[in-house]
Amino acid sequence: MADTFKQRPVFRNIHISQIVSYRLPPSGIVSILHRISGALIFFLLPFIIWMFDTSVSSEISYERFTSAFNAGVGIFPGWFIKLVALALIWGYLHHFFAGVRHLWMDATHNTTKAFGRSSALTVLVLGVVLTLVLGAKLFGLY
Image 1 (tube, rainbow, N blue to C red):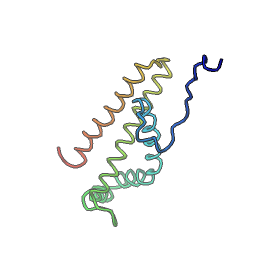
Image 2 (image 1 turned 30 degrees about the vertical axis):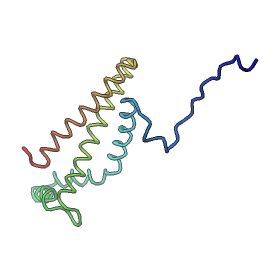
Image 3 (image 1 turned 180 degrees about the vertical axis):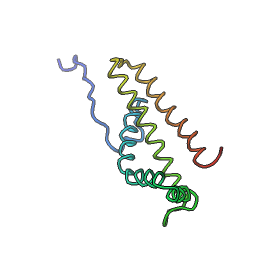
Image 4 (image 1 turned 180 degrees about the horizontal axis):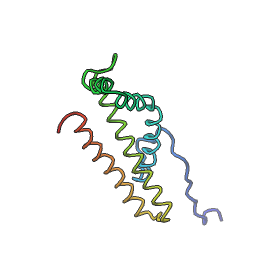
């Protein structure tokens, strides 16, 4: 009698060792990156406040701010400061676009699989393209 019953599939959470082989959908990638970008912005908030304060306090402090991107600050060379600023640019752009995506989905109740995929890909492309454009400006390519 037991042979006539079909075994039901068992769905379990993936183990950490399977994380490399597990393929997330684009919306899952955007969700994880949204959390990472939020944490990046939070932990680098002192650097963001320093950049803002130094850039708007006076003409002398603005010169110190611009020289930090060329000569560096303390033990950190200028290229490292630019990379941190570029990471912040990406973090802000991705967090902003992913947040707008979530607000749009909440407001319109458009939660179909097709819209989730297309909007996630749009967020990923916009974040990367605008980061590359602003990064080119930051590193003096134009």
